[in-house]
Length: 325
Image (cartoon, rainbow, N blue to C red):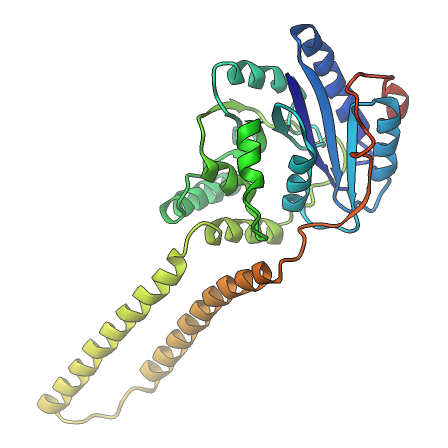
Protein backbone atom coordinates (compact mmCIF):
# COMPACT_ATOMS: atom_id res chain seq x y z
CA UNK A 1 0.00 0.00 0.00
CA UNK A 2 1.26 3.45 -0.91
CA UNK A 3 0.82 6.04 1.85
CA UNK A 4 0.84 9.75 1.00
CA UNK A 5 1.83 12.28 3.64
CA UNK A 6 0.37 15.72 2.90
CA UNK A 7 2.02 18.53 4.89
CA UNK A 8 1.20 22.21 4.32
CA UNK A 9 4.15 24.49 5.14
CA UNK A 10 4.30 28.18 5.90
CA UNK A 11 7.64 29.60 7.04
CA UNK A 12 8.84 26.22 8.29
CA UNK A 13 12.47 26.28 7.12
CA UNK A 14 13.74 25.61 10.67
CA UNK A 15 11.73 22.43 11.20
CA UNK A 16 10.64 20.90 7.89
CA UNK A 17 13.89 18.92 7.44
CA UNK A 18 13.58 17.54 10.96
CA UNK A 19 9.97 16.64 10.22
CA UNK A 20 11.00 14.76 7.09
CA UNK A 21 13.65 12.82 9.00
CA UNK A 22 10.97 11.65 11.43
CA UNK A 23 8.77 10.64 8.49
CA UNK A 24 11.68 8.70 7.02
CA UNK A 25 12.03 6.73 10.25
CA UNK A 26 8.38 5.75 10.09
CA UNK A 27 8.72 4.82 6.41
CA UNK A 28 11.63 2.51 7.19
CA UNK A 29 9.53 0.77 9.85
CA UNK A 30 6.65 0.28 7.43
CA UNK A 31 8.74 -0.96 4.51
CA UNK A 32 9.02 -4.58 5.81
CA UNK A 33 5.22 -4.63 6.08
CA UNK A 34 4.86 -3.90 2.37
CA UNK A 35 3.96 -0.23 2.74
CA UNK A 36 5.66 2.48 0.72
CA UNK A 37 5.40 6.19 1.38
CA UNK A 38 5.52 9.49 -0.47
CA UNK A 39 5.61 13.01 0.98
CA UNK A 40 3.70 15.88 -0.60
CA UNK A 41 4.81 19.24 0.82
CA UNK A 42 2.85 22.36 -0.05
CA UNK A 43 4.68 25.64 0.42
CA UNK A 44 1.95 28.18 1.06
CA UNK A 45 3.87 31.24 -0.15
CA UNK A 46 6.49 31.15 2.61
CA UNK A 47 8.69 34.21 3.07
CA UNK A 48 11.69 32.28 4.34
CA UNK A 49 13.76 29.47 2.78
CA UNK A 50 11.10 26.81 3.07
CA UNK A 51 10.99 26.24 -0.69
CA UNK A 52 14.79 25.95 -0.88
CA UNK A 53 14.75 23.32 1.86
CA UNK A 54 11.99 21.40 0.09
CA UNK A 55 14.03 21.38 -3.11
CA UNK A 56 16.98 19.97 -1.18
CA UNK A 57 14.76 17.32 0.33
CA UNK A 58 13.59 16.33 -3.15
CA UNK A 59 17.21 15.91 -4.24
CA UNK A 60 17.96 13.64 -1.28
CA UNK A 61 14.73 11.64 -1.38
CA UNK A 62 12.89 10.62 -4.56
CA UNK A 63 9.70 10.17 -2.56
CA UNK A 64 9.39 13.91 -1.97
CA UNK A 65 7.00 16.02 -3.99
CA UNK A 66 6.67 19.72 -3.40
CA UNK A 67 4.23 22.35 -4.62
CA UNK A 68 4.96 26.03 -4.04
CA UNK A 69 2.28 28.73 -4.35
CA UNK A 70 2.83 32.10 -5.99
CA UNK A 71 1.69 33.73 -2.73
CA UNK A 72 0.02 32.84 0.53
CA UNK A 73 -3.40 31.39 -0.31
CA UNK A 74 -4.15 29.92 3.13
CA UNK A 75 -4.11 26.48 4.67
CA UNK A 76 -7.36 25.39 3.03
CA UNK A 77 -5.87 25.92 -0.43
CA UNK A 78 -2.69 24.12 0.66
CA UNK A 79 -4.67 21.11 1.83
CA UNK A 80 -6.56 21.01 -1.46
CA UNK A 81 -3.32 21.16 -3.46
CA UNK A 82 -1.78 18.40 -1.36
CA UNK A 83 -4.76 16.11 -1.84
CA UNK A 84 -4.74 16.75 -5.59
CA UNK A 85 -1.09 15.76 -5.86
CA UNK A 86 -1.26 12.77 -3.52
CA UNK A 87 -1.41 9.44 -5.33
CA UNK A 88 -1.42 7.05 -2.36
CA UNK A 89 -3.95 4.38 -1.50
CA UNK A 90 -4.48 6.35 1.69
CA UNK A 91 -3.54 9.92 2.61
CA UNK A 92 -2.42 11.25 5.97
CA UNK A 93 -2.73 15.02 6.51
CA UNK A 94 -0.49 16.53 9.16
CA UNK A 95 1.32 19.75 10.06
CA UNK A 96 5.03 20.09 9.34
CA UNK A 97 5.85 21.72 12.70
CA UNK A 98 5.91 18.34 14.53
CA UNK A 99 2.89 19.19 16.65
CA UNK A 100 1.32 16.18 14.96
CA UNK A 101 3.59 13.31 16.14
CA UNK A 102 4.73 11.15 13.18
CA UNK A 103 4.92 8.07 15.43
CA UNK A 104 1.10 8.01 15.44
CA UNK A 105 1.09 7.05 11.75
CA UNK A 106 1.56 3.40 12.68
CA UNK A 107 -1.48 3.53 14.97
CA UNK A 108 -3.54 5.12 12.21
CA UNK A 109 -2.61 2.33 9.80
CA UNK A 110 -3.55 -0.32 12.36
CA UNK A 111 -7.00 1.24 12.68
CA UNK A 112 -7.23 1.56 8.89
CA UNK A 113 -6.77 -2.20 8.60
CA UNK A 114 -9.88 -2.64 10.74
CA UNK A 115 -11.95 -1.23 7.88
CA UNK A 116 -12.15 2.47 8.72
CA UNK A 117 -12.00 4.97 5.86
CA UNK A 118 -11.18 7.87 8.18
CA UNK A 119 -8.94 7.67 11.24
CA UNK A 120 -9.01 10.97 13.14
CA UNK A 121 -6.57 12.04 15.84
CA UNK A 122 -8.28 14.01 18.58
CA UNK A 123 -6.05 16.38 20.52
CA UNK A 124 -6.61 16.54 24.25
CA UNK A 125 -6.91 19.91 25.97
CA UNK A 126 -4.06 19.13 28.34
CA UNK A 127 -1.95 22.23 28.86
CA UNK A 128 -4.50 24.65 27.40
CA UNK A 129 -5.66 27.59 29.47
CA UNK A 130 -9.03 27.50 31.17
CA UNK A 131 -10.40 30.32 29.02
CA UNK A 132 -9.31 28.71 25.75
CA UNK A 133 -10.74 25.33 26.74
CA UNK A 134 -14.06 26.85 27.81
CA UNK A 135 -14.29 28.94 24.63
CA UNK A 136 -13.57 25.93 22.40
CA UNK A 137 -16.18 23.77 24.13
CA UNK A 138 -18.75 26.54 23.91
CA UNK A 139 -18.03 27.04 20.21
CA UNK A 140 -18.38 23.35 19.33
CA UNK A 141 -21.55 23.06 21.38
CA UNK A 142 -23.02 26.03 19.53
CA UNK A 143 -21.87 25.11 16.05
CA UNK A 144 -23.11 21.50 16.33
CA UNK A 145 -26.59 22.86 17.07
CA UNK A 146 -26.52 24.81 13.82
CA UNK A 147 -24.48 23.00 11.17
CA UNK A 148 -25.60 19.96 9.21
CA UNK A 149 -22.52 17.89 10.14
CA UNK A 150 -20.97 16.99 13.49
CA UNK A 151 -17.69 18.67 14.40
CA UNK A 152 -15.78 17.06 17.26
CA UNK A 153 -13.83 19.21 19.69
CA UNK A 154 -10.11 18.56 19.28
CA UNK A 155 -10.38 16.85 15.89
CA UNK A 156 -8.55 18.85 13.25
CA UNK A 157 -6.75 18.12 10.01
CA UNK A 158 -4.52 15.38 11.46
CA UNK A 159 -6.19 12.30 10.02
CA UNK A 160 -5.88 9.33 7.69
CA UNK A 161 -8.24 9.07 4.73
CA UNK A 162 -8.75 6.23 2.31
CA UNK A 163 -8.56 6.86 -1.41
CA UNK A 164 -12.33 6.92 -1.81
CA UNK A 165 -12.62 9.58 0.90
CA UNK A 166 -9.95 11.70 -0.78
CA UNK A 167 -11.67 11.34 -4.15
CA UNK A 168 -14.98 12.35 -2.58
CA UNK A 169 -13.43 15.45 -0.99
CA UNK A 170 -11.82 16.44 -4.30
CA UNK A 171 -15.23 16.33 -5.98
CA UNK A 172 -16.28 19.20 -3.71
CA UNK A 173 -14.95 22.12 -5.72
CA UNK A 174 -16.44 24.99 -3.72
CA UNK A 175 -14.24 28.07 -3.35
CA UNK A 176 -14.99 28.81 0.32
CA UNK A 177 -13.61 25.65 1.90
CA UNK A 178 -13.78 24.46 5.49
CA UNK A 179 -11.95 21.14 5.35
CA UNK A 180 -12.90 19.99 8.83
CA UNK A 181 -16.55 20.20 7.82
CA UNK A 182 -15.94 18.72 4.36
CA UNK A 183 -14.23 15.67 5.87
CA UNK A 184 -17.27 15.15 8.08
CA UNK A 185 -19.74 15.83 5.26
CA UNK A 186 -18.46 13.08 2.94
CA UNK A 187 -19.06 10.50 5.66
CA UNK A 188 -17.73 6.91 5.33
CA UNK A 189 -16.86 4.77 8.39
CA UNK A 190 -14.47 6.53 10.76
CA UNK A 191 -12.96 6.30 14.21
CA UNK A 192 -11.17 8.62 16.60
CA UNK A 193 -8.31 8.23 19.07
CA UNK A 194 -6.82 10.75 21.47
CA UNK A 195 -3.28 12.08 21.71
CA UNK A 196 -1.47 14.83 23.55
CA UNK A 197 -0.41 17.68 21.31
CA UNK A 198 3.35 18.13 21.06
CA UNK A 199 5.10 21.44 21.64
CA UNK A 200 6.02 23.44 18.55
CA UNK A 201 9.79 23.24 18.10
CA UNK A 202 10.49 26.48 16.24
CA UNK A 203 8.75 29.73 15.47
CA UNK A 204 5.29 30.89 16.39
CA UNK A 205 1.90 29.83 15.14
CA UNK A 206 0.45 31.98 12.35
CA UNK A 207 -3.01 31.53 13.85
CA UNK A 208 -3.90 34.78 15.59
CA UNK A 209 -7.11 35.39 17.51
CA UNK A 210 -8.55 37.16 14.49
CA UNK A 211 -7.75 34.30 12.11
CA UNK A 212 -9.20 31.77 14.57
CA UNK A 213 -12.36 33.87 14.84
CA UNK A 214 -12.71 34.04 11.05
CA UNK A 215 -12.05 30.29 10.82
CA UNK A 216 -14.80 29.67 13.34
CA UNK A 217 -17.22 31.84 11.38
CA UNK A 218 -16.36 29.89 8.22
CA UNK A 219 -17.32 26.70 10.00
CA UNK A 220 -20.58 28.23 11.14
CA UNK A 221 -21.62 29.58 7.73
CA UNK A 222 -20.28 26.93 5.35
CA UNK A 223 -22.73 24.13 6.05
CA UNK A 224 -26.11 25.70 6.75
CA UNK A 225 -28.36 28.70 6.17
CA UNK A 226 -29.73 28.78 9.70
CA UNK A 227 -28.29 32.23 10.49
CA UNK A 228 -30.51 33.57 7.70
CA UNK A 229 -33.47 31.68 9.14
CA UNK A 230 -32.57 33.07 12.56
CA UNK A 231 -32.68 36.59 11.09
CA UNK A 232 -36.20 35.92 9.85
CA UNK A 233 -37.29 34.56 13.23
CA UNK A 234 -35.73 37.50 15.05
CA UNK A 235 -37.51 39.94 12.75
CA UNK A 236 -40.84 38.25 13.45
CA UNK A 237 -40.18 38.34 17.20
CA UNK A 238 -39.35 42.05 17.04
CA UNK A 239 -42.52 42.66 15.02
CA UNK A 240 -44.62 40.87 17.65
CA UNK A 241 -42.90 42.77 20.47
CA UNK A 242 -43.51 46.06 18.67
CA UNK A 243 -47.17 45.18 18.22
CA UNK A 244 -47.59 44.30 21.88
CA UNK A 245 -45.78 47.46 22.96
CA UNK A 246 -48.00 49.56 20.68
CA UNK A 247 -51.12 47.92 22.09
CA UNK A 248 -49.92 48.62 25.63
CA UNK A 249 -49.22 52.30 24.82
CA UNK A 250 -52.64 52.74 23.19
CA UNK A 251 -54.40 51.03 26.09
CA UNK A 252 -52.52 53.09 28.66
CA UNK A 253 -53.40 56.29 26.77
CA UNK A 254 -57.08 55.38 26.70
CA UNK A 255 -57.16 54.66 30.43
CA UNK A 256 -54.75 57.25 31.87
CA UNK A 257 -54.58 59.79 29.12
CA UNK A 258 -51.63 60.83 26.96
CA UNK A 259 -48.36 61.35 28.76
CA UNK A 260 -45.07 62.72 27.50
CA UNK A 261 -43.13 59.79 25.99
CA UNK A 262 -39.79 58.87 27.51
CA UNK A 263 -36.74 60.07 25.63
CA UNK A 264 -34.55 57.25 27.01
CA UNK A 265 -37.03 54.59 25.85
CA UNK A 266 -37.03 55.95 22.33
CA UNK A 267 -33.24 56.16 22.15
CA UNK A 268 -32.84 52.62 23.49
CA UNK A 269 -35.37 51.23 21.03
CA UNK A 270 -33.83 52.98 18.03
CA UNK A 271 -30.29 52.00 19.00
CA UNK A 272 -31.20 48.37 19.69
CA UNK A 273 -33.12 47.97 16.44
CA UNK A 274 -30.32 49.63 14.47
CA UNK A 275 -27.81 47.21 15.99
CA UNK A 276 -30.01 44.21 15.14
CA UNK A 277 -30.40 45.47 11.57
CA UNK A 278 -26.63 45.84 11.15
CA UNK A 279 -26.06 42.31 12.44
CA UNK A 280 -28.65 40.88 10.06
CA UNK A 281 -27.18 42.84 7.15
CA UNK A 282 -23.78 41.45 8.08
CA UNK A 283 -25.11 37.87 8.01
CA UNK A 284 -26.76 38.42 4.65
CA UNK A 285 -23.58 40.09 3.38
CA UNK A 286 -21.50 37.05 4.40
CA UNK A 287 -23.66 34.71 2.36
CA UNK A 288 -23.79 37.15 -0.56
CA UNK A 289 -20.00 37.47 -0.49
CA UNK A 290 -19.62 33.70 -0.63
CA UNK A 291 -21.91 33.55 -3.65
CA UNK A 292 -19.84 36.34 -5.22
CA UNK A 293 -16.60 34.34 -4.89
CA UNK A 294 -18.22 31.14 -6.11
CA UNK A 295 -19.58 32.84 -9.23
CA UNK A 296 -16.17 34.28 -10.11
CA UNK A 297 -14.80 30.75 -10.48
CA UNK A 298 -11.21 31.73 -9.72
CA UNK A 299 -8.68 28.95 -9.03
CA UNK A 300 -8.07 28.08 -5.40
CA UNK A 301 -4.33 28.65 -5.81
CA UNK A 302 -1.57 29.38 -8.34
CA UNK A 303 1.56 27.23 -8.46
CA UNK A 304 4.95 28.90 -8.70
CA UNK A 305 7.15 25.79 -8.64
CA UNK A 306 6.65 22.05 -8.33
CA UNK A 307 8.40 18.77 -9.02
CA UNK A 308 5.20 16.73 -8.88
CA UNK A 309 5.25 16.02 -12.61
CA UNK A 310 8.89 14.86 -12.63
CA UNK A 311 8.83 12.73 -9.46
CA UNK A 312 7.94 9.15 -10.29
CA UNK A 313 9.64 6.48 -8.16
CA UNK A 314 9.11 5.98 -4.45
CA UNK A 315 12.46 4.49 -3.43
CA UNK A 316 14.44 6.32 -0.80
CA UNK A 317 17.78 7.81 -1.80
CA UNK A 318 19.87 9.59 0.76
CA UNK A 319 19.17 11.12 4.14
CA UNK A 320 18.29 14.52 5.54
CA UNK A 321 20.61 14.64 8.54
CA UNK A 322 23.03 16.97 6.76
CA UNK A 323 20.20 19.43 6.12
CA UNK A 324 19.32 19.53 9.81
CA UNK A 325 22.91 20.22 10.75
